[in-house]
Length: 561
Image (tube, rainbow, N blue to C red; front, side, top):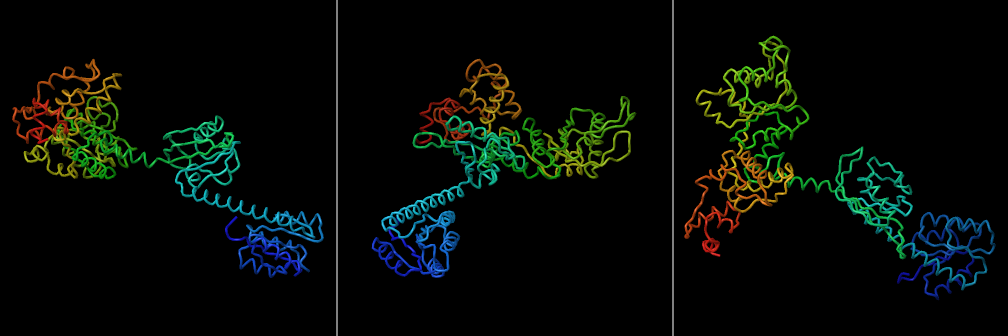
């Protein structure tokens, strides 16, 4: 009971009863007000917060039942005890149905009335406490971003929060229904786990499963189910919490893509710039020229431009221009009609037509002939092609991506490549750095390819020896990433131990070390050279010492440690 004394309203048309009964109640510490009619009672109820009303059923020409009805409608928390000098079963039943706490007959014994008052006030306190708990639980439910679902021992939905409606699709119409029979538009994996946990009385946890509702997008969620037991450890139901981790998974994937972007590996700033350009260009129809040494990944960049953009569901056609003769290349690119040349026994679509709506990738574009350069220029200018042997123009919608390991600007200066075509192709250029300019990525590439080939060949190779890592860091890599991939594949095939050793490497990798990279220092090593070695070894002093053929003590002495 509260520290403030309970307030009681005594409603009776007999002043003597109000005075006598009021005096007794005040003596017990209650705060008492009196009213002779319904009008006075309502005025006091509107002005004062009462805990209890004692009301006579017969109030002159009025009925206390009417006041009871008004109290329960406007002030439902107030307890009401009815009493009357003319007890009737029908009246008693009506009073209880209307919400009276009890019904007493006159003359009322005060001891009995006092006991009923205490019970009524105690009941009010319990209800208010339960209401506070319910309000607190509602506030907690609303504040939790995770879906919270309460299931009773019969497997029926008891309660859920707003997040459960958003994530799982639960609604008010499903309360008090068995979850096993519910249809929320999903595959029901969570419900199966909840039912199993309820039946076995054991907690369950499912990490990051796919959740796809027919009316919504795919989500990644984690589910935790905890049984709720009473004092005797009898399970009374379960509480299930569904956490939507879609955004977290996307962020993790985003972080992962810092090192791997559409199959292109690289954590060097120069590669991050390439990734940024790919993202910026992916949805644009702009012609892109990819320039870089052989083996740097030009084809991967072209594929990323296509698959990462709005044309990803349309055709992606690749052509190696240096692998075909001029006549074959013309037929492959533009198609031909039957009889156009010997062997043309049927009409054939060219690669440009097949790429309609999508992307065509022209690799080794620097090797095409002047005649082909002229035809390609018209395609880029007018977006039409003509099949060999036919003058009918065919309109196309194609995004053109080209690549070369040559310096087209020099070829333009030498008159070997059309200047106007060069400008058409070189609207945006993506320059891929050679591997020797991003040595920080070598360990990343080594580990990636090792993981790939150990899976492919079903090997148990776990890593590289320090000597092998040193060799890889010193090598000049004229073949770039492709050469490194082949070297790891070769080593993985030959390796007979847990780690790849020097003897497992291709012989050319051992013999063709770059003179500039073969650092060899005397006992007194210039500090700036040591600094270069430490950069190559990612700060590993022991490995730097081995690379330079000096002791670790010498390394520490030069570093001043």
